[in-house]
Length: 499
Image (cartoon, rainbow, N blue to C red; front, top):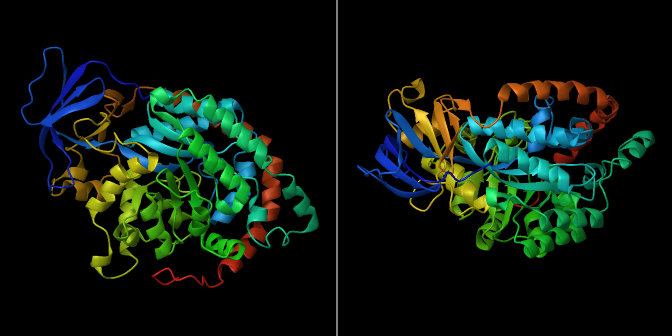
């Protein structure tokens, strides 16, 4: 788990990445009981301290993934030319039939990948059907604990299906298919809220910095009473909450049809927008939406990889930052963006901001992207003591090899972290002062064993879900034609940039 390494250690001889300076400068880091106590040059090693030689290495704070899906680990490589709505329609067969061991394995595959790519904490919106369970959440938390990452785990919950959430989609189905999708309904809202209360009341992972949260998955998939029930639980237990808000144009249009106002405005009217709330994606938000999130202390988890992968559009990162919104960066799940590589996500965040117009004044800087992937993501997770290398912060540190071609020469540290690094220069990863990756090898779990288990699970689940896959094959043409046609309607609310 994200254990605190007891005792004192001194990291000596490395270069420290700093967004305030062009090139990393030498710095020693003194750590005591997993907490950074001092940062400076020429620090004396206490007599009982372990000394770690970081000569030739660049040190940066662990990256923080503001939005992922652990349940997607076993679904990697299943999607191709899918929109978000096709992905949602495919969910019953992509994630169907999971045993408790499968749920842990899927999450552990994602956690292991993140650890090997410099991520030390993540916000995981995970799915169980027909509703979350204490055992399932416990298995997912155990997966993170064994790999050694910090996490916020929020079961995705809803009381409506995608067929009910998209106006007219259920009616577009033939009668026989309509009856079959009606059988895939989630549990009633009251039962799901009771399950969430049970999970929150019995959560036992807080000492490992693995926290429970709530995730009403998409506002349109939730009745107002259900959303308010999630909000009440979040307030009662002091738990954060994240929801997919304005991820696709279809969602924005459907929200205006159902509520007569934007999704953010509706969530705010229900009392859900505040310091513990984060909106995942937020592509189709208006200036008023962004200003409201900023004023209420809420955050956005920007997921550029899946935004492009699913054809949802381009998040207005420059505008969000200018309006004062806290923005973190996420990878989304490997079933919708194919990778948990936060270096790639940061690079894509810069590039998506740049392609929105020819004037560099309207882009973002590498430093802004870097802060989003570290400090901004930490705030989205609700952690105040990670995301930076400074006294009082937890010692979550990534060590990069400056002898790797990515760093030949070292012209601009943060510039190269955002534009060049791809996790290939990664040498070590430390969480809480203890190494979980050493010399590019994951120390905490057996990757070869995970690979064998993943392949066995794939074969078993493929056979088990054959009937569900067959149903999706019948549903796919309807979703593929209906949803893009729905999304071609003009979005009447002014977004500041062209729709």
